[in-house]
Amino acid sequence: MNNFEKERRKQRRFEQIGTNNPRCQCGETDWRCFEATKIPHCANCCLKSTIDANNEQAKQRRLKKLGTNNPGCCMCSETDWRCIEEHHVGRRKHDPMTAQLCANDHLRVTDMQNDHPMSNEDADQLLVRISNFLRNLAEMLRLVAQRLIEFADVLLERAQMPVSPTKRSTS
Image 1 (tube, rainbow, N blue to C red):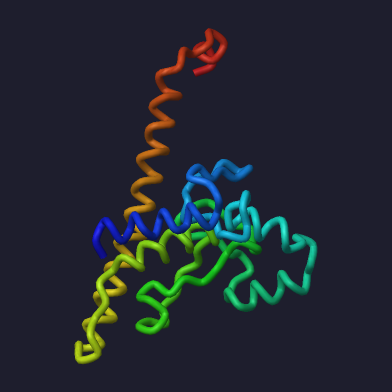
Image 2: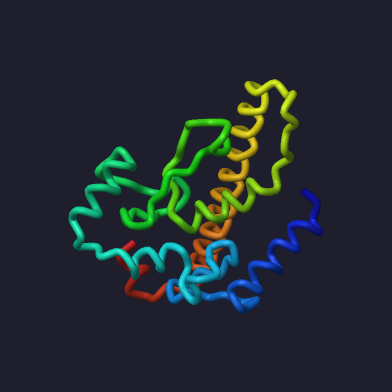
C-alpha cells in the first residue's frame, strides 16, 4: 500500500473520531487506538469503562477464551483481562497462530497489516502464510523497538537530572 492510501485511511479515521488530535485520559494519543464510537477513550479505556472488573462470569469466560489465568499483552505491560485480545499473527485467513495483545496494540498491528501486499489466488499458500507471519511479526517488533527507544530516552532524561545530596550519600 502506498503512502497516499495510508494517509487517506488516517484522515478517514480522524473524520470518524471528530478530531485530528485524539487524547485519552490515560495519555494515549495514537489515532489507531480510537474507534469512531468510543471517543474520547482509547480501546483499552473503553473496555475498562464498559466491562465491570468484578464480573466474575465475564472474567472467567474471557480467561477461558484466552487459555490462561494470567493474560498479558506481549507488546506492553497491560495485564487487565478486559483489554487482552487474541491477534492472528499471520492474518486470520492464513494462520491459526495467535498472540495476546491489548486492544490498543491490536488496533495498531491490525492497521499495519492493512498495508501488507495481498497475494493472488494462484499463489503458493504455504509461502503466503510464512510471508504474512514474518511481516506481522516484524511490525510487532517494530512497535516494541519504538517503545524501548522511548523508554531509553526517559531513562536518559532521568539520569541527567540533578541528584539531591541525600540520594548521593546512600548510593
